[in-house]
Amino acid sequence: MPKPRIYVTRMLPERGLNVIKQHFDAEVWPEYAPPPKSTIIEKARNCDALASLLSDKIDAEVFNAAPKLKIVSQLAVGFDNIDIPEATKHGIYVTNTPEVLTDTTADFAWALLMALARRVVEADRYVRGGQWKVAWHPAMFTGRDIYNATIGIVGAGRIGYAVAKRAKGFNMKILFYDVIPRPEMEKELGAKKVDLDTLLRESDFVTIHVPLMKETHHLINADRLRLMKKTAYLINNARGPVIDEKALYDALKQGRIAGAGLDVFEQESTPIDNPLLKLDNIVVAPHISSASLETRSKMSEMVADNLVAFFQGKQPPNLVNPDVMKVKPLSKLF
Ligand SMILES: NC(=O)c1ccc[n+]([C@@H]2O[C@H](COP(=O)([O-])OP(=O)(O)OC[C@H]3O[C@@H](n4cnc5c(N)ncnc54)[C@H](O)[C@@H]3O)[C@@H](O)[C@H]2O)c1
Image (cartoon, rainbow, N blue to C red; front, side):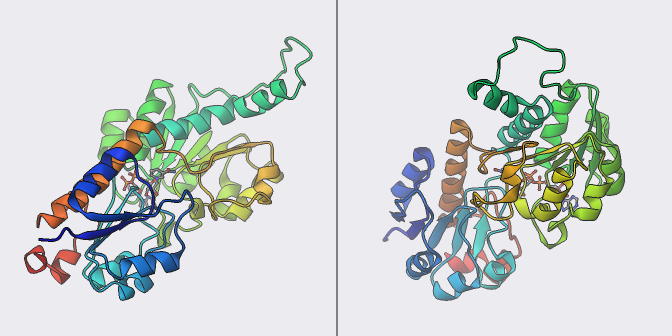
């Protein structure tokens, strides 16, 4: 039996890529920048599988061009770049890589939070820029305390919970908002469930951990930013479009909130003329929250494990569109 054909849209970490190469007839896009969509479409035409990244737009145009395509295995927990209803309609299985990146991503939300509150990046620029002339002054780079402060977690799923666990170590008051109850947040961490407006009004640090969906697009808009304390910080390492970036710029520029830590943007990569980048009260990163060596290797392994299980006729462990099994049951595929 010939091996199934797969197109891999980027050079994945070795651990997973080696497994893919062992089980599949694999072609890998070799460049650092993503393949153009036309290339993905052209390659998908003859493939049984795709391994994708969150920067690849995988939609009906791809599915319509790919009659043999059976599965898209994505290296990310978020899958807002994939049109899931269309995939399901076409009988295409979609998988992601949850859990292995939870702690790494929560750590990075904390890195942004702490860098903001204690002005680490500003201070670094000050020292390197030769501005540090006076050895010590009581008013130099005064920031905000993290311990005993109130943190508001928007989206208390895996990453939101891991962020809250860390907050407990800082003796923080923990508020959260979610569309589902999440009793473990209350029982295990003593967190309090509140509505979004209360969370925004009462928190010193607001951190976003919801997936990007129709319902969460611009969830944090101008009106909601107006509810936040003048001294509060906003952290987002979920997805850029959850925050209205233009409204965030206005709030930061007018000093209506104290600062923002952003790993994600409405457009990625964010253009150098994005006005946000002119502000001193933000800390930014290029979408690297899950970027630890070990986690990226584990993610690549999961991409491979989902593919291998599927082509062995089993339900892939991280199937995000289980309804597809009604459209195209595994028994009809293999
Ligand atoms: N920056 C990065 O590199 C990076 C890395 C990992 C994950 N992420 C993002 O983080 C997101 C969260 O990941 P996770 O593993 O914690 O997901 P999860 O599914 O475990 O948690 C998401 C939570 O958000 C809640 N939610 C959904 N819609 C909501 C709404 N409208 N209002 C309030 N809450 C809502 C869900 O009920 C759930 O509890 C991912 O979807 C991804 O986009 C980003």
